[in-house]
Each structure stands twice: as C-alpha cells, then as structure tokens.
Image (cartoon, rainbow, N blue to C red):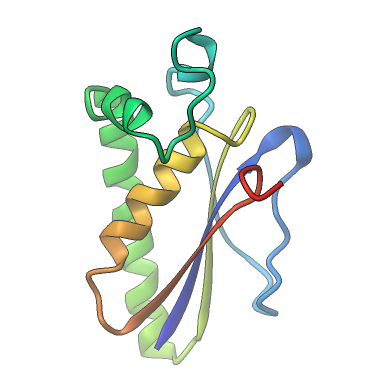
Length: 129
C-alpha cells in the first residue's frame, strides 16, 4: 500500500518538508491560476467552501492543471507500487495557501481516494493554524 500525503501550503512560508522519511515528492505551483482571494466576495472562503469550488469548476485553467498533475501522480504511484515504495508526498502551493492550493489538494485527494490500495492523508498547512 502506498501512503500519499496531499498538502496545501503558502509559498510565503516555504515549501513543506516531507516528514515521511522518503525525502521528497511533487510540488505544484498554483499561483498562475486566477486567485479568488483577490475578489472581495470570495476572500473569506477557502478551497473547501462551495463558493470557491464553484469558482474553480468554471475555470478551464484549473481543470487542465489538475488533470495534468493527476496523470503525473498516477504514473508515479504505479512505479512506487512496482518498486515497493511506501510514501509519496504531493504538495500544491499558492500565495496564501487558502484558496487555489486547498481546492487543488481536495480535488486530487478525491480522485486518488477511489483506489483501495492507497492511503490518502490531507494536510492544509494554512487552514490548521
């Protein structure tokens, strides 16, 4: 079984350290995608709220970005299984770590959760403060 830690973070505070002992993984930068945190009516929400989910469901850039990163992650997971590796870290970062990265983390984790041979952990660095 492969444990996949999916993490959202703020680039202002730096890339998260992989604590699994594996020493690495993927870091994806969401900052090129439109930031709903700059829209007054959406500032107070996070990527877990329906208002932000609705915002990104209509964003073709986010959709393409997530589908492309999912392909990379799934490919790595297959190799990890073949090589009997046990931990993969996947991190999504944005400016504040509350909107784009949280939405991406939740979406990716939901896609991976359909696989019974993966253990998915979600960490939202900026939401747990």
